[in-house]
Image (cartoon, rainbow, N blue to C red; front, side, top):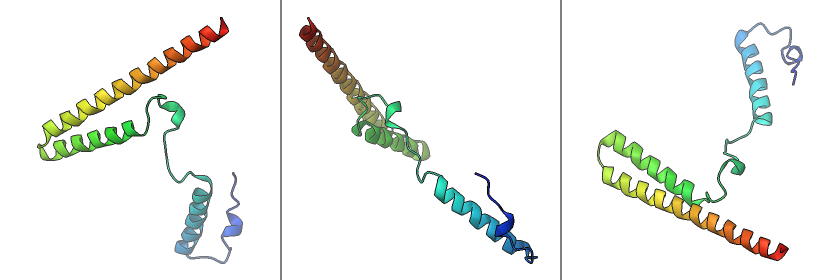
Length: 112
């Protein structure tokens, strides 16, 4: 989008600070208008079995790892959370794939 800067800056303005404030305000206005307020990962990039519980546990695991790296304590807590995350992830994936297999068998038997 082209922005006509000359109408924003009156010709009689000789103060560089005032000109800069006008330009900055124009850029901030355009940024607020056309930029997204937050960045999020689209749901389509996540596996379908990756429900909200898994990212929550993943964040907890990562925070625990950062705390361990900063303090040197809490390694066993990190591994406990890591194991919990891995087990939960595997079980959710296995349940999802089992459900898909059952639906497929049901659909095949309906077609035949």
